[in-house]
Length: 113
Image (cartoon, rainbow, N blue to C red):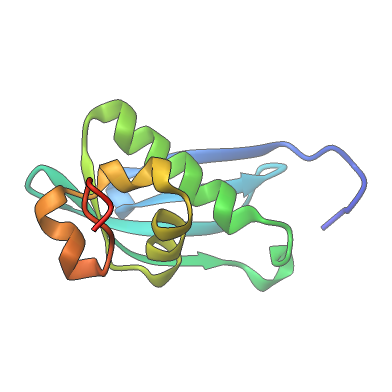
């Protein structure tokens, strides 16, 4: 993957495959899988092709997926370790995890507990 060239990076929902995908210059570079679970999307796995590793694509992918879930008014269940870590590290995404589910994932409640 080129390091200094401007890259065309796009995150797309592929509901027929149950995942969001990230493309770099039109090439599939990775995905984050999700499964609808009532009013929530259960995120289970994130993977970036090793050829595209080390460029922050997983973070961009998960940001795009979670931002889309927020826009749709859909909560998330962060079973995927990468998604969980991002939600834990970036409090603005905590509100996507239903308050009654946060303890299950070791996440703080809305009041910081």
